[in-house]
Image (cartoon, rainbow, N blue to C red):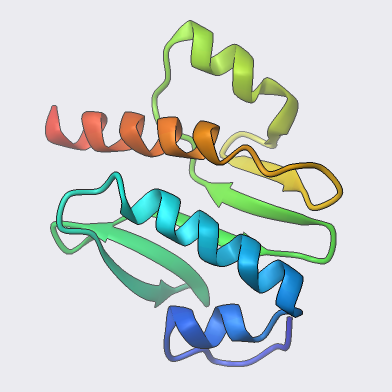
Length: 119
């Protein structure tokens, strides 16, 4: 990834090699498909999916992994499933050398949406 001021999520994704672009695009689509009236923007130089105009989730690409943050409130079962991907308190890292668990990302997104609609 080049260090730059990204103007759009498309521009951010385009800064990666083609194979990583495809993964980032799928992460983007997976999240957006589960957020009612999803929007997107660049915030903190990261792709940000918004709900009702407020940041909901961020995702990013790195040399050896894709990251999703922050971690939403989750039940015990989901907490166990994400444990292997935890990096610090609020970040999940999905290694590029392994299949990306898009279904798990979808479930995390749904947990975030549920927590926001309960507020």
